[in-house]
Amino acid sequence: MGSFSTFRSLVKLKIMEKDAAIIKKKEGFEGQQAIVIPRKIISQSCSNDSILSGVHITDIGYYPKAKFHYRERLHGIDQHIIIYCIEGKGWVEIGKSRQAIHPGDFIVIPAEKAHSYGADDDDPWTIYWVHFKGHLVKHIVDLMLNQLKNYKGYIHYNDARTKLYDEIYLNLERGYSLDNLYYVNMCFWHFLTSFIFDEKFNYPGKKKSADQVDLSIDFMQKNLHTILTLEDIARSVNLSASHYSAIFRKKTGFAPIEYFNHLKIQKACQFLQFTDLRVKEIASELGIEDQYYFSRMFSKLMAISPNDYRAKREVARKRKPAE
Image 1 (cartoon, rainbow, N blue to C red):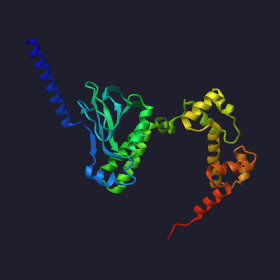
Image 2: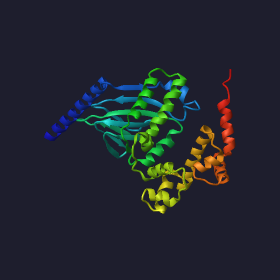
Image 3: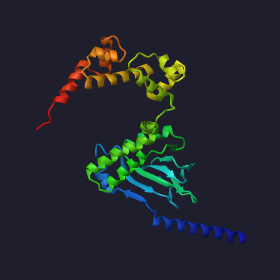
């Protein structure tokens, strides 16, 4: 009898806790933001548009210090979700995988996956969240999941990322015109890629990179005026040529010398467009003595000769706007 009474008390306590949570959720969180785009807009403007149908937001929000925040979806939903925590703590469970969430963590929840999540009772999380869908989204989410373990990743805080969110949210508040939807969803591409390529997103603010491939690219850029061997570049980051070549190709998809030549041709394009240097002089500036070798290399990569490239840019620059 005593055990039944205890069980009944526990059940009652759980119900009271659940009711309290529901009340809190109804009251919301001070400073919260949330926009649910009307499903009619999604079906009429996003799903059938050649640009928007690839990736588009369906819901977006920001919950600061979201005490009692909790969601459970036993069968998942037809949208993918990204949750980014900037303060406090929480947890996310996807299938049988449960992850603790701390500041800097983000979680990707694929569509149709059973999941639940909630804020920590004592130190509730502050989160940005977005629901999104589209025929390209699965490929993007797969790319993200290939880089993550158990759906969770970590990124360095960057004010530019939160400003991107603000840009999206504030424009959505102004309505659902087609140009507005184009703008916010193109911004959302950038927002998403900031999670996939955090290192690149933060690169402009870095004074020094610890990544050996990035350091070697810096070395290449500083030495565009000369000829480097694979051994020279590998030595600049204290690696053997074979090991360096393997990690460089894995990260960039190119051999180091091929990548170095790409940077040279990029610089050559700038010389052709912004200076009056002759082709022979440009080749010399890039450490290439044989201008014909340089021209062949340029033509192979750019599918146009250096002189034709310059002439084409010159015509475009001098062309007057239509009356």
